[in-house]
Length: 59
Image 1 (tube, one colour):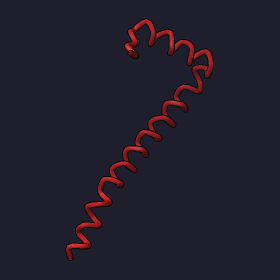
Image 2 (tube, helix red, strand yellow):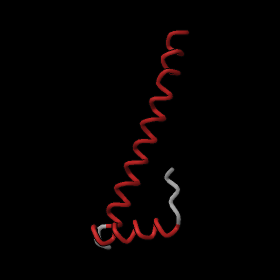
Image 3 (cartoon, rainbow, N blue to C red):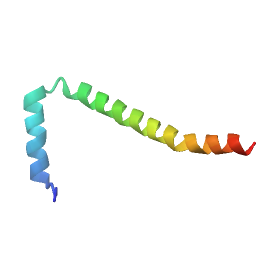
Image 4 (cartoon, helix red, strand yellow):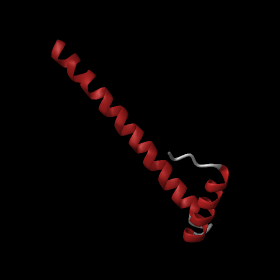
């Protein structure tokens, strides 16, 4: 359904560069990376939460 080829990805990257400019791209990439890292951290903490609750109940 969303099969993107190399040509389509290049066109998308060119459009992004035109819209944001080459100077803003590192800032956008950094912000996106931090957001993904925080999301993964939060999802891992949520997965660990029920385990901690069960351990407290068993004691």
